[in-house]
Length: 181
Image (tube, rainbow, N blue to C red):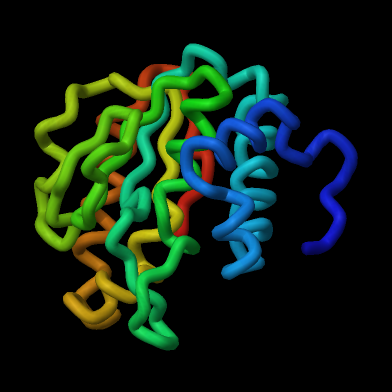
């Protein structure tokens, strides 16, 4: 892992909690790319909220949050890379994460929902102006999503995602990160 910029590393207590609850150390040893993912998430949160402490008490939606049933696009084997690390990180930082994914989220400690994100209106069940922040960084690059829906069919869903983000954000809320330009 490249050295994080000062102030961009996981707080020790958060790292310890992720290891105790989710086996972070063991999973890192098997898939070192998890460090890059966590560093990206820390960077995004600091960029959006000014600090990791700034997320405390914020209700944050992670669309296509990842799951415990994700498979590697290279090997087809189950991978920890696409587990719901962002929501887990938020929970340990004192935020109120809400994850939405089509995969298995059973047993996760944060609020979560199963939804077919390839369907227009899939997020309609969430209340208007109910989130301080939204991230949607894994949907359009997800191996499962790409297998379900070819890139040529993405434009209407990208427009739908933008509509939903506008509807779901509270006034002053932030898009933490989006793969949807």
